[in-house]
Length: 485
Ligand SMILES: NC(=O)c1ccc[n+]([C@@H]2O[C@H](COP(=O)([O-])OP(=O)(O)OC[C@H]3O[C@@H](n4cnc5c(N)ncnc54)[C@H](O)[C@@H]3O)[C@@H](O)[C@H]2O)c1
Ligand SMILES: O=C/C=C/C=C(\O)C(=O)O
Image 1 (cartoon, rainbow, N blue to C red):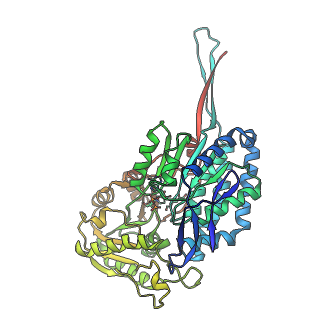
Image 2 (cartoon, helix red, strand yellow; image 1 turned 30 degrees about the vertical axis):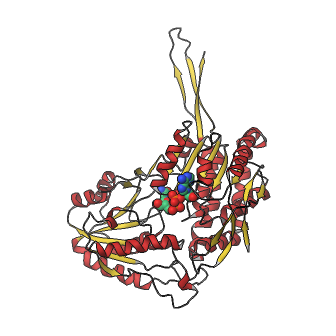
Image 3 (cartoon, rainbow, N blue to C red; image 1 turned 90 degrees about the horizontal axis):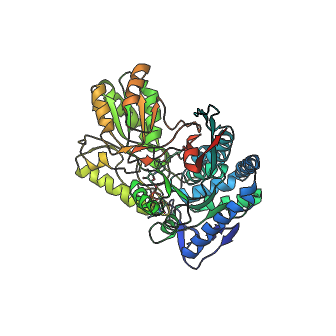
């Protein structure tokens, strides 16, 4: 049986208190996770604080970048182990994790190093009455100890998306992975040691949120800033914790993302993109589409094509090469999603396909967190299923008539993470994109990522932007040095 220990000051640390890590595929026991208490969280923060003053703080930027590139290479060398660990924890298809999660886990250590190394700081010359003037020089310094709180849906990808730029900027980190997915973050501890990243630079504490490692870490007064990905309600709690001591936060939270499909869209491209945005990773992607609006002339045809494609999805174990659809992350999350499936029917939805818990035809698999991919129609816009983030493999498809109408529908949400627009008319695409209240808008694509671009949400989907040079605002302190000449 596997054991997932905390990683503090370069060493794996066991604790008395442990919890089970179970597979969402068949509920089998994967291993035991050592839960960090206040003592271990404190030790991890102290280790991170000391490392700032120690060898890590003494390295040149070029030396740090060399080390981070080594980390990326080592993830690729141990690709199979990362892949197996990620699929055991999440149940996602191996080919999906091999295509997205693990390569991005490595890329996140490379992309930011290069961007940050090549980014200039500002300089202004100021006129003074004596005419000699003054020079202002911007200078960036690391912020200090960064707490990284990560979710379970893309565990390695979303954790390294924070750790990569944090370390590239010279900070040290304490990571709290989701209690559901401890494996790849723990494995990264081994990689850090193998690559010679100094002890204390990367630390991992395991546990839950309230009254556990998550709260102990975010409330710790010596944490200088907190970067969080997860639910909006958790983001609110973390924001309150950060208020004490006026610590900076970066929040990437939930979404209820719309897809806007115009009658002039290339229907096959729109179907392919919407299938991915609604159902990939069993619908557990923050950028995923749960509200689909289709212009009336295309509505019936689009719905019929989507149903055909959903019927072809094949549920199965991660290692089944035919399967392209895994379980939800846990039985607890399955209960939440199944509750929304029941609510949809109570609220008057027509279930076009799916709508329940499947019989997997195998007693072992039937113990797992399986759910059917589902399409609804016919709900009023006021329905909770239309308003609340479900985070499952489901979407509601509704017709619309005019551009004005669909913009209003798309924006009628408290969230503002992402949207997808499908049309062959570029000026319409640009016109609509500008009026969508979201941090990210894709046109004729979805989740097409360029790591140099700003990433983040509007409204209740988050605070701040990360990615490319935008991460600098959060991961560094910008100091102005004014020199009188
Ligand atoms: N905007 C984005 O980029 C993005 C990306 C991925 C996921 N998400 C969102 O994440 C959610 C799914 O992930 P989840 O269920 O793991 O989210 P979650 O908020 O339940 O948990 C996220 C992390 O926060 C920790 N946590 C929970 N309560 C805490 C507390 N009181 N103090 C400190 N830490 C605490 C958890 O243990 C976990 O590590 C969805 O809402 C999804 O939209 C957003
Ligand atoms: O589930 C949410 C996906 C987020 C993706 C990223 O943060 C990224 O691609 O960098």
